[in-house]
Image (cartoon, rainbow, N blue to C red; front, top):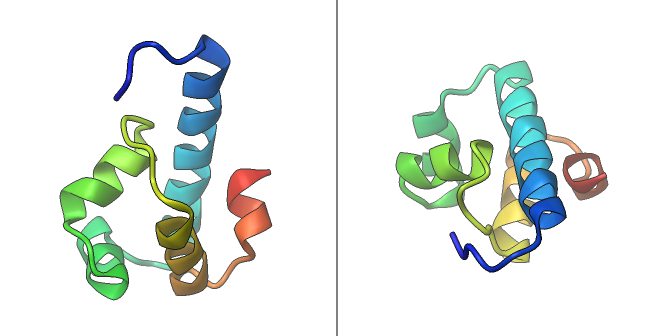
Length: 76
């Protein structure tokens, strides 16, 4: 995670990660199940959920589809 980013960026990343986690749990999926669905390692999902990773737009789109919610709900 780049440390030269403003604190507000880090806060937003953590908020998005929390929404990813909530959506995954609402869909009754484990991190491993979601990771398999979107073609990444479960550690990647963990890093996204805890705000320590900058997921690509493409990956966020795949996650939103996998948990059946609009992308806007993840990044609001």
